[in-house]
Length: 257
Image (tube, rainbow, N blue to C red; front, side, top):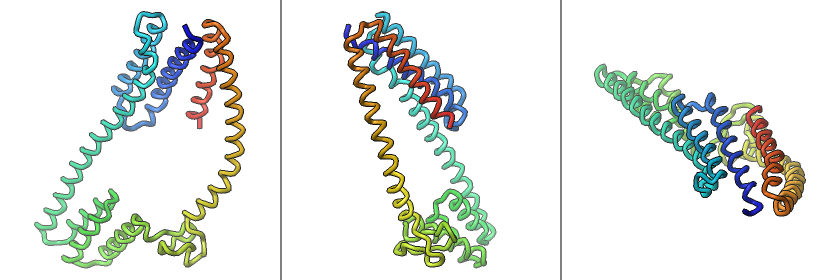
């Protein structure tokens, strides 16, 4: 049995344990996972953990240990994507019903309130092009200051989305994309200000990352040297004692922010 074998076992088991803890902590914040989904994920994760121990004992194919950590996280993201797709489909159905009712109301009573309501629905969902279409239909029937204002808002949002305009964060004045400074207060365009801030921040981060990379290389080199020269049991115990607490420490730091 090679010296890396115990490390692979401990690494796989630790990753699965971390995934189980991650699913447990992310469940209250993740709106796309139901309680049934959560139970299913935890059962899958626990099953992978048990099968890993069976693999170590030789009661289950040892090849399973290599891809077992991929199973829980893959199913986790698959469930989220499926639930998000179902939610989008439900929202689309509700949107179509609301729009249909608003348009029917506009045709029945020959006023612009129905078209205005349809525009409001699209505006709330940030579909500014369709919102503009229905606001213009409402204006054709009856022009009011409120309709004109909503048309201007929709036009501005479209231009902002196309990055033809930008809003000054200091004074809220709208500026053309060709202007690098606000025409009112002279503040820098947010993208330029962000680039300058990123350059200043990255220089200090570079020093920290360089130190971390050097320390990491030393630690990894020591691990490889120790694993190659130690026995199976010693490697297993050493890696468990040092690596597992480190992994859970970083997990704790992530979720305690």
